[in-house]
Image 1: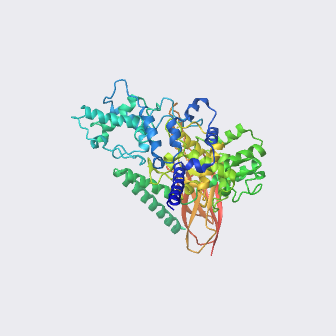
Image 2 (image 1 turned 90 degrees about the horizontal axis):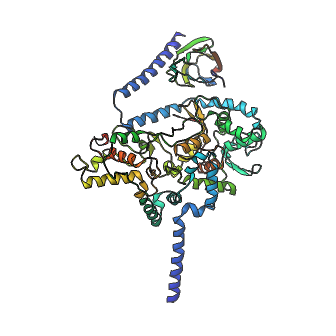
Image 3 (image 1 turned 120 degrees about the horizontal axis):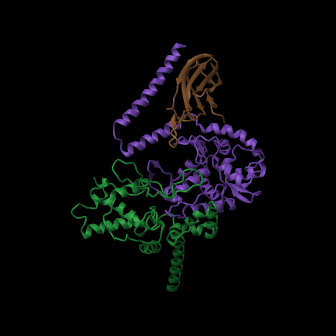
Length: 224
Length: 277
Length: 108
């Protein structure tokens, strides 16, 4: 009697575990289409222009993030894997962490151009560089922006950075935290909508330093 | 006669005065981003009244349709049958052995019945991309065919295994992160919370009905370019904004995306064209 | 389609004394006068200048337009319907183009 009960519980337990495992990978399991086929169809959609083929390579983190519709749907191991991979992908400027030029940072934050190519009009110049930050964030007071990312108005003030404490080790540590987020957002927010600007070379380490300064410096219009 | 002239003059003046007052009032004070966005949305709503200039392209399209022998083309309901054809696309076509959406099918039929090569078709499709006030025949044909299904409900047959396969591919591509900005379609067009990019509210595939509303109203007449924007041009522009590699119109990628989007839109009433900034 | 073609829409039937909306869309670039930024040469504008609405050959409304109006303008004018007949719009632009379009209306 006890044995059958135990066996029965075990069977229910096993049956209970497998659907849970299936739910972890919703798009892949229900699909019935193989990743190679999807990749073929994806590649067929782009012009044969060899200049931009490099854009079509997926790195490991992108591959992991592609399997889930959002971070909420991701299992803990996948999240941990992306964090681990991305923490290795942060580079600092030659001079380390320093307070850069917030006016240069402002130019990059305001500029929506850079990286968009098309064979008909509208292509950006190859020398255009920018972060297009207002597409997703509200940064300076009164300037229209998007609501996809958190509001950054008064960011430095909220972080408690003042002229007195900005050059202390704690102040520089805060600057480093923001630098890390702008350089490689996925190291702290895996599979975030925010691009990994520094990692992909869209912005250089000095650019990211200027942007972080723009967000945190007490003199910057963000904090006025 | 004088009375009529006077009434219409007063009416016109009143309208102009009201609009003028509103604009002057708006310029007087500093508007917050939310207020500016409300004005933009009000503008969009006002533009949706009246006749859509896109209908001019539909009239052009009727002639271009015959000019390129597209009345021989079978869009799924028999050769030359145009009413309601757009509503059941994308679908599988046994003569081409592929799933095709409206624009891909037009491109295929142009090759079959109008003697165009694939390069000529591509040039024909892209003749108005990047231009303003361009009276393109391709846009006209797409507008004509789409408007012929006004009032019908989107009815993609997801039970057909080929169509279902394309639907699943489109879904996976929707979530595939790619490119130097790590974007996918879901970066902007997914999620439960209502977000906007700058001043534009974004529709989401996860909120019911929004994908249908966005997709069953294409081609969309754009006031800033004074011409309609077809679905494949919209894909090309989205792909350009995502910093992906430049898009090839009428490719399988487009068909997969169309199948996913129109499949999600099943049941929405078609109301073409819509109008936007 | 050539510049200057129009879609004109009026209700087919109206009650006597009812104010109807005469709606139209005219294909026109409505380009303003401007200078070429590279050469400094002046590019004359190309825009509609006048629109007249006739009801049975009686002038009802006249609209003077300039570059402030957007391309492919949609215009709606009110008209008090008092007799059946022909509604005609006549419009011209600053490069000498002159066009007309008519529609019929029955008034009960």
